[in-house]
Length: 94
Image (cartoon, rainbow, N blue to C red; front, side, top):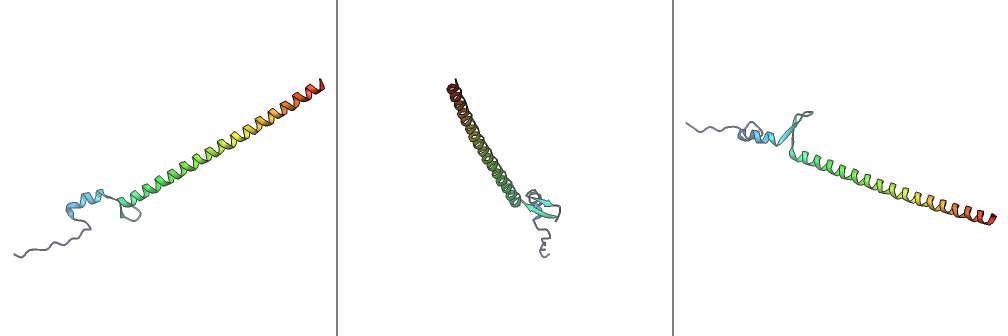
């Protein structure tokens, strides 16, 4: 009897099929496997986008708070100046 050579017909060893299938998912639009690397890169993209959005929101909130604070200070200063002028006019007239 001569030894027979088994041909590998699958892209992964049969004994490793389950672990290989666990490491990838199937893209149903192309029926091709999506490996963990692409999922990790997508996760990284999502994390970067979330961080950028959070930073932009924080910057916008800080700018709005600063602008509102400056406007309130200007309104208070103008109101106090008007009160001082009215009081001086009333004192001069009386």
